[in-house]
Each structure stands twice: as C-alpha cells, then as structure tokens.
Length: 101
Image 1: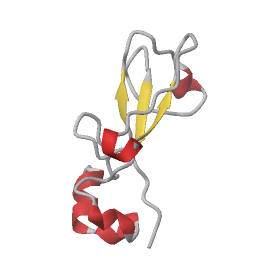
Image 2: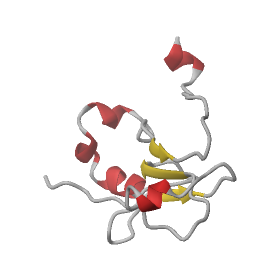
Image 3: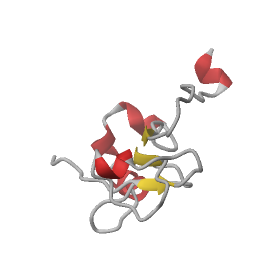
C-alpha cells in the first residue's frame, strides 16, 4: 500500500497567524491562517486526496487503508490539525463522555 498524500482543509479564525504557510508550506489563500486539518474525515473540514476525493469517501471504499481496528468506527475517529495562534492558547481535547471515562 502506498502513502496517501492529503490536502488539508484550512480555517481562518481571527486568532490565527501566518506560520502554517511560511514555515510549514500549507497552501491556502486564507488570512489569517489559523488551522490546517491535515488528517480529517470531519464534514466541517475534510482532507482530500490529490484527485479531489474526500478522505472519508476513500476510507469507506478502502477501509483497510486505516488499519484493522478502524473498521469498527462509523467515521474515522482521528482529527489531526496544525494550529498557528498569534498568542498562546490552551490545549484542548474533545472526546465523548463514554470515550473519556
């Protein structure tokens, strides 16, 4: 199996900066560039394959690409994002109550 090159969805929140673009090469016209969702099946910011296919659609057709345990989830359970804030912000995680307990 080959490595999948993904294009992230990007977010332009007011607290964002420019380092995702300048230091990490994220390509986006958004300014400020606050977040790059680099591994995402979330409907509000999916990652895309080079041919424009959403990662969620690819994994639905090829569940083995995410490993054996991911088949049990309705949606790929991981969202990985890079964040650039002009100022310090708190670290946040948002698991469900069932998962967290």
